Length: 526
Image (cartoon, rainbow, N blue to C red; front, side, top):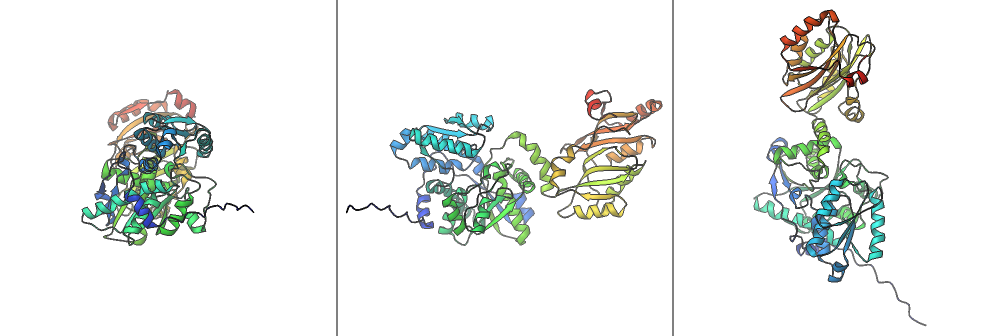
């Protein structure tokens, strides 16, 4: 009988020693630079631990991704390079593939969802990539890339689930250990953001082969924690959906190889939220004057959480700043949430009597809060009830955990308060929606003021006002400048017009009256 051909047995899994050899021989420096390892001096002083920042945000494509992509392509045969490579990506991997292919003289086809921002499409094109737009999601783009790969004989460059890609990313750990030694320091742990798992697989393989006592700690967003869930379940878990704030780590299913490596080698996993990441972006900016993307700040957010949880002092931690491809328009959101994320700002809904003098009395309570006066960071109010007024207010804090104490203090003084510091609905939407038409706002005049950004500015305003003039609308948000922009509605009877003009002159704050602005009449006027 003719002998039957048996399928060859699967190749044995690569060990850390195998990956060590691949990392030591990886070809990344044709396109990548050895990024610096810099101490975050301000953050280190605050945490009483040394925090070192691995500046992968300064790579030519502002991300570590070109390391693995280029190493994969550099190991292809001349024939494979001649036919070209393909990938599916809407972000940093796409740029790494495009740059690497141009360096190697190969064609690069990058399939991106039709929803990809034009900024990223243009970036890939400028690096020599051929962009194909298909579908509305990464899954659609990936399926189309797989079809094109077979049709055109291209080589697929996976963003994370490939040993050569993993080895390319592992060169970061090689540099970290060498740089720490040159700084004359020791290293206790490396914190690594996880999307599909390519970066942490490379880092963990190298560190556990060379310095197994150094902890490797993975970091994920609370709405994109596929790796943490998979390790806990003992098998790969597919998330039904992922959050997109940290789009660089928004992966529903981690790789087979990256799951195997992470399960065996990663010491711990930390989960962080949006506010913590926004605060970390600000921390990094304070120390470096650079702005990283959300994925690039995950490691710093995790270090802060780790120190708070374990009460460590005198340790040395490295954070990989893995990317800086941040859309400029997102900075407004980041700045808004950073203060809350660090709990340097507390938010409240406070109910006060709708009677003359109660507004001023409430501000006096704020001025007398235990621990010293607090700056008002935000104040939103619109008259809508004859007996009670509901205000949305933000206050600076002196440390974490103060918001509940401040709310209790308001309640003791007769002002019913609800702590909104950790309420996403309030932080994302309600703070911008306080207002509207009000039948109670008769004889209302609307003015925009510029107040000096200092304690007491609002009290001066209220003290100079006639007690018969009622505040019917108030909107203010601290923007970090020396002067605050404030919108105020005042109920001033026509007979008081001259007195009101004198009041504005005595006050001395720059102002513009908007009573006849058509926008006011459409959305706010009684």
